[in-house]
Image 1 (tube, rainbow, N blue to C red):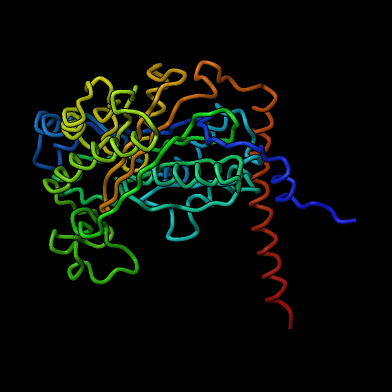
Image 2: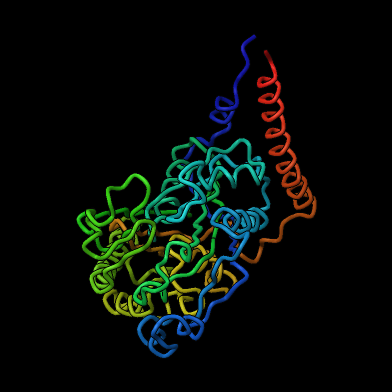
Length: 392
C-alpha cells in the first residue's frame, strides 16, 4: 500500500483558504564590548561632538574573540524560538541576511541550522547589504504564502567591525555589530506581511562596496575610484546619503499602496538605522511625525542587515507595537539596493508571549543534542578516513 511522504502530508494539511505569514517570534543578540565615540577619537582624528552632530551615534557594539556573525545569529535565533515557543525541528527554512558571513561557504545559516538541531530546515545566506533583512523576510513570507513551507527563521547578523578600515574616519565611526531574528509562521488569520517592494540600481555599485574573493583587482574595480581595498568597506558618503533620502519615502509609499493603506495609516516605521539625519529627512518628505520612526542608532550605530530586526525587538519591548498596527520596514544600502515591507501586526500579541516550560526544556535538550550530533558525525568521518588511510 502506498504511503504519503512528508511533503504530501503537508499539502493535505494545508488550509483551503488564503495563507498569511505572521511574525510570531523575535530576538536579538549583541557582543559584550561597547565602543564609545571617545574611544574612537583615541586613534582617529575626531570627537564625540563631531560624530554625534553628523550621525546621531554615541556608541556601538564590537564583536570580540569568540564572537562572530554565526554565533550572534545563533543567540538571536534562540531568543526568537523562545518567544514563538516552537522547537527547532519545526523550522522549514533558515535565512541569514549578512554582508559579513562566517565563511564564503558553508553559509552562516547552515551553521545556525546545525547548532539549533533544526535538521528539517533548508538554510542559506542572502546578500543584499543593509536591505538584506527585508529581502529575506520577503522570500520567507512568499514561501509561506505559496504553501511550500509553514515556518521560517529569518536572521540579520553582522560583524561589520571586521571589514572596516579603522583609519578611515568616514566609515569606522558609523558601524557596529549585532544580530536580530524573527520567526514567521503560516496562519489563516488575515494580516502579517501584506506587501513588499524590492529594488536595485547596480549603476551605484561603486558608491558602497567591499571587494572580496572572486572580484577583479580592487584598484581596477568600479569601487576602486573611491579608494576600495580588498575586504575593506569603502563608501561615497554624500551620494549614499542623497540616495537613501530619495528611496526611503518612495518605497514606503509604493509598499503602502500595494498593501491597500495610506502612508498616514502607518503606525510605526522601522527603518535601517544608518544615520539619524537620513531618518529625519525621510520623515519630512513623507509628512510623518518623526516620533513614528523607530530610532536606536544612537546606541548601536549602523549594524547593516541586523539593524531592522534589532530595532523591531526594541520597539516591541518598548510597547510601541500594538495589535492590528501597520508597521513599515525599510532598508537601503549597498547594491545599490533598497526594500520596503508593510506588516499588519496580528498574532500573537506581544504581551501573550511567554513560552511553555515544557517546550523550553525540549529546546535545551535539542541544543545539547545538536552539539553531540555534530561532534559524533565529525568523529565518524575522521575514523573512516583513518581506516581508509591504513588500508593497504
